[in-house]
Length: 119
Image 1 (cartoon, rainbow, N blue to C red):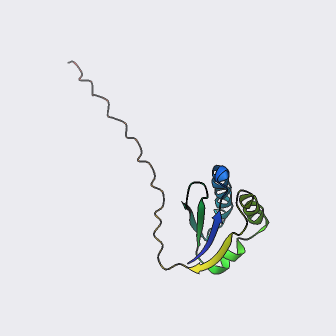
Image 2: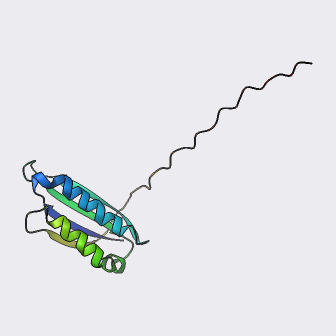
Image 3: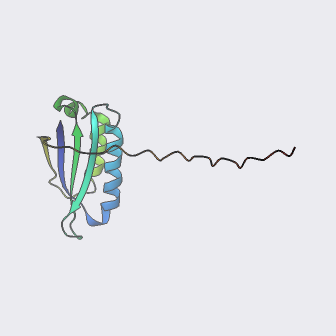
């Protein structure tokens, strides 16, 4: 597996917009069956948030093929909420342990009390 790792210095007043833009990129990536998921983490001081986005792919070819026009437009939008100087790397994934979302348990109907027949 391979990961695309982006590092961004986000404008503090644009953090919510940046998160929404990341979700939009994720929605585009989810169109590919070889996409495994992504995470966005925030660090640094509150007045200068540093965000790292890691997306995980089955193959390097799939990762690179994902960089279509829709992806590029969504990333360009995310960059408008950041300071200049975003860094990008492609890396081998050594360990990946994302669990799929759990489906809610189906509610079971309680059995209705049986009515005894009078003889």
